[in-house]
Amino acid sequence: MPPRTRATIEGLAKNMQIARARVGSAPLLENIATLIAPPGAELPEPEWVSAALEACEGELLLDLHNLYANALNQGEDPLSYLRRFPLERVRAVHLSGGKWIPEPRGTGRLRLLDDHVHDVPPDLYQLLEELAVRVSRSLRVTIERDGEYPDFSVLLEQVTLARRALARGRMRSGVGVPRSDGISTLGGEIHL
Amino acid sequence: MSAQAFECVLARLYSDGAAWRLFCVAPEPLLEEHDLTAQEREALLAIDRIGLEMAVRSYALKREKCCRRGVHRGAPG
Image (cartoon, rainbow over all chains, first blue to last red; front, side, top):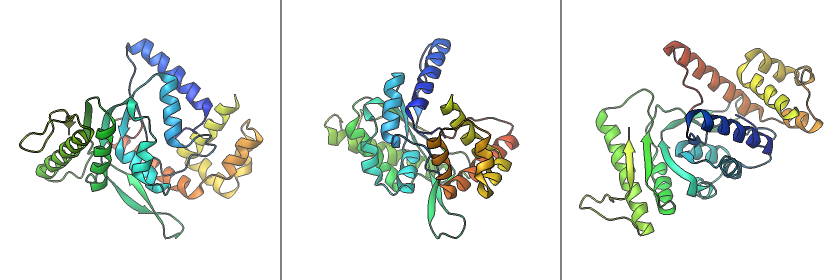
């Protein structure tokens, strides 16, 4: 978890240049989840991510559960938080789940841990819908699950919910074409 | 070079259990080992200690899982 400063953006931009030169294309940058408010921050996360992507001329892999967890852990509204990110740079999306864990030392408070072993929470589909309203390009959406797998039908249901959220967003933005199953043909791809 | 020193302290706190425990009890000796500005020292002394403890435990668990699987997955997704 680097500090969110101008200096770390400079370092990131240099590293991206190296990666671009060696690989031949730029990797997508992903926003990460954190249980700690990084010390020494000069910028809040959305503005730091915006500045980092601009410096790198990069594109974003937007992990909606990471964004959701960070927003809630900081006491922010996830939808408002999402709108502050550079959504025009989003190329791909991750969905996953997590769990609330108690803070140590008996504070009585909880923080949301992104753990990839729980179902995608309903709020995330609302964030995905909002994203689809604001991003016109095709989105590649991946549902991440690293263990404690439920029945496959449960995972398929999450794919369906993601498709519907994407379709609702496309319809709201005026670019979607509804099919008989309610799924837009311009939503994007959903992967497990 | 100071920005690097600041990141170095953070990396130690996140990944070195002994350094983190020392910092919890008496942060000054650990900070003395690094070439930090007064502002950086202040930021580290004001660190979200509860969040730090939760992050340290979470990262340790992830490292342990990776070791068990024999893979390095890199940063969490």
